[in-house]
Length: 241
Length: 248
Image 1: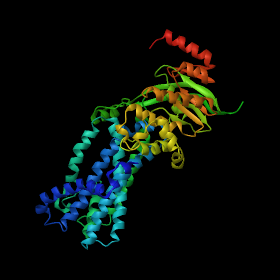
Image 2: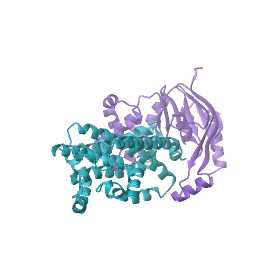
Image 3: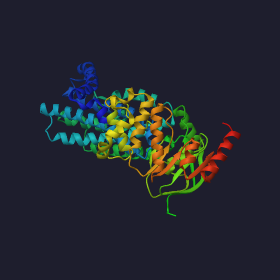
Image 4: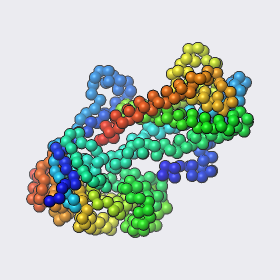
């Protein structure tokens, strides 16, 4: 039913929903192309592969944070499991992201940068990324229920994400301390450099054998702890007399 | 006498409500300082009674006395904090006349959506669609988005779907205050026929006359505690006296 209310029911609607990330991409491209485009091969795809996941994360987390507000009346009046409602509300954004990243991959194939089999790796990485996003969303959902200013803090932080994530730059362009911070403290980094390496047809700096395991560990940790928090606080947050 | 379908044994329900702190900083300070983040509110205490198959049980009490909490426990939506709720069946419940309606979908899609929430299969909805539409009186609004319906029309839609479940065990809060007179008559007829059927019904209501006529047992709650259980005539009389002596 969430799919039916989305703009994803028609081709035109699906195109329309792509306009947001594309507009974001266009602005970033024209601003940074001259400065970074010369140093980063296939800058447009590099940028797109960075912007899509960050845009997805921003949208998804904002949506997940309002989960209890949206479905409280269903949870308190029916036996529908909260997990069913959560997954059903996330289905369309997940699908949308998968389509977007696959389109990005298709461009890479068209330019001869990625073999068609690369789409499978791209899909696997996207699904792992979705788990990370869900985990982050669950943490913020609970925090938002416990403290009133979390959504405002998230708004500010989400605006900075594009700059503290290697979307339009590569890690080797940063100072050593900034690189360490972005590489290890930003859970998005292994995913972003993974996407960029796949669609760019060559490893971006600091992409290595440890990148994928790092991404998987971040996802598992975020999802497991987020789900634990969700189940621990869910009843108390929705049970109001 | 048949074995009870539902047995409540010294059931208590305490809501542990987390109070939202104004800032993350305050939340951290409260956590470090060991200040309680939640307050406890006992909505029900020490409630025990049985419901047998086909029995009609009325639940009365002032606002905030724990009626809906009790129904939610019986329907399996809430879990008791203490005591046990033993049920051999699942109750189909109706406590809110808009829970789950998707405002951006047309009426017809919402029939399937709410039907699914009440455990009605698509094939069953297909069979009963005509009856549901007729009952709701929304035939001309089938393709109108629910957000464009009035509150009363939404209530009619929701109630019509609920009224067409084939569930044999129902738990509901009877109030159709927003619907117009003609629909209230329809709803009243539905309640009458449900009460005359072999269905097991748990019902919270303020309609003394209705409970007197149809219920075999009444549970009177006050401040979450059972005041009396049993014969409707006697208990409803005492409840009315109590309400006159202790106005809200």
